[in-house]
Length: 189
Ligand code: GRF
Image (cartoon, rainbow, N blue to C red):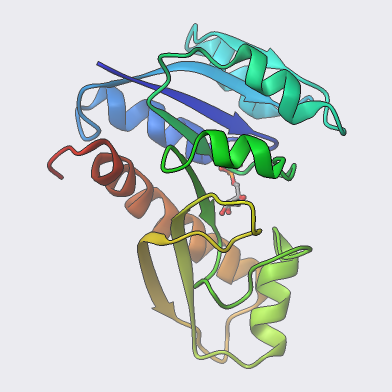
């Protein structure tokens, strides 16, 4: 059984999707052993509702050090699921190949510092992009620069707004996140 630690900062719908797809067997041979939040958020409530161990480590310059202390040594995968703090380079290096993130755009486009949430979707519209999507990628010290594991796109139409793009991206995320987790864990999917 592989142990997954999930980091959240927000509503945690991707966390919920991971919990549900473990329950349904779509993600095989895994359990969520811990949920870590860097602020009060609904993601923490989801962990509580499912009786999953959870901890709040307030965001700030000590976050990565404290995270390093609470993460069980037998953790197989750390999943950033709507997590907004930047992890320290040393932390990323210590867990090389074992930390993944989901990003609401087609990296390497629309990534890097400041590119999160609606900022991404606004930028996609402003740039007149013909497509957007989501990317699951490994986390390295460079923000949003790690190798892509899975990516899927959709067409952006003239009617799309940042809000409709956000909704479409979420649906794509729910589809590719479990698949990417299976891939990294070496499962069939
Ligand atoms: C997702 O769009 C993800 O790509 C981004 O933050 C959002 C989190 O959504 N990193 P949720 O909290 O899982 O609903």
